[in-house]
Length: 157
Image (cartoon, one colour):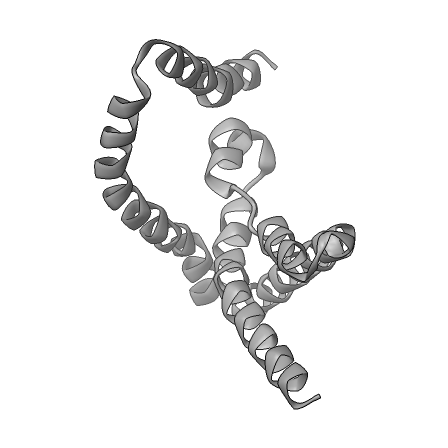
C-alpha cells in the first residue's frame, strides 16, 4: 500500500499540484505561448506511445497465438462495452456529445494506470493493453464512418 500511495502522489497528485501552482503564478499569455510550442511535440509523443505498448502483445502473439487472439477479442469486447455505456449515458445530450463520450470511454489512460498500479495488475496487463491499442485507435474511424452514413441517410430523407 505504501508503494501504491507513493506512486499515486508522484504520478497524479504531484502533477496536479504543480499545474495548479504554475497556473497561479505564471501569466496566461506566457503559458499560452509555451503551450503552443510544446503541443506540437506532445501530440507526436502521445500518438507514438501506444506502439511501445504493443510489444508485450507481440511477444504473446509469437509465443501463444490462441491466447493472444483471445486477448484481442477481450480487448475489442472491453472497448465495445465502454463505448456503448458512454454512448448510452450521454445520448440525451446530443449525438455529437454522445459519440465523443463513447470514444473517450473506450480510451483508457493505460500508461497512467500502469505507472500507478502496474506492479499490482499482474503479468497479463501489458499484453492486454497492447491488444487494446487496435480497437482504441479504430474507434474514431468507425464513428466517422457511422456519422457519414447517418448524414447521407438524413440527406436522402
